[in-house]
Amino acid sequence: MRVVADIPNPHVKITLHSYNGKYILKLEKANLEQIYKIEETEVMGDEGAKALIDEEFIEAVVNRFVDMRDAFVSTVRRNG
Image 1 (cartoon, rainbow, N blue to C red):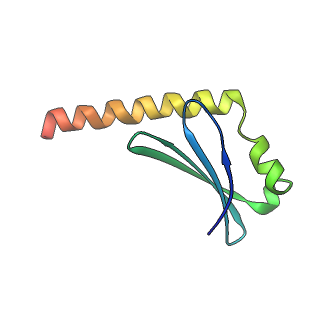
Image 2 (image 1 turned 180 degrees about the vertical axis):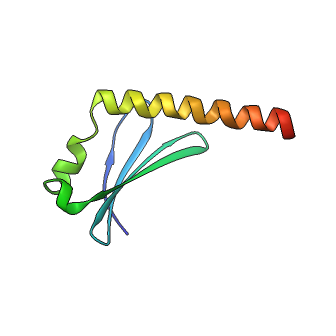
């Protein structure tokens, strides 16, 4: 797996990888991560993959991280 770019963002760590005909977009916040696999044929090269990361997408990602954290905290309280 080749790192294509580390994409600066104040809310999440974003790394774009290339592997086996796919771009792998990895977003991390604290101890959580989200991974999106994008066929290389769906975008126009590295720049096309980077262009998918707009403000609306980041907002949805951050909201999903909040939901993920809340779900984990809840299960730990119930079962931990």
